[in-house]
Amino acid sequence: MREIGTVIHYYGKLSVAVVKLHETLAVQEQVTFRGATTAFEQGIESIQVDHQNIEMAGKGQEVAIKVKNKVRVGDRLYKAEEDY
Image 1 (cartoon, helix red, strand yellow):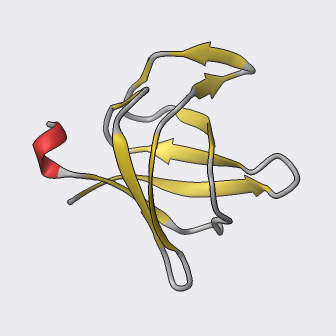
Image 2 (tube, rainbow, N blue to C red):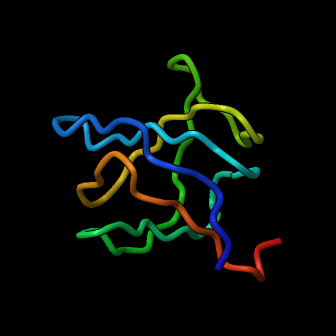
């Protein structure tokens, strides 16, 4: 797995993580969130920037991603190597 981003904010009521990306990320890719108490995989169903849906986000962007479990600031986002 390769690190592609870091959680910088989490909206608990919405189950949305704001992630600062270090690599590209696209809708339908499989990712893993990992942290001190976080560890789960999920598919990316939607990515938003400024409340607008986008299909792909690039390095340096801060994006909102709907998550299925709680994440915490500082958690890392990983993508499987075969997705490259």
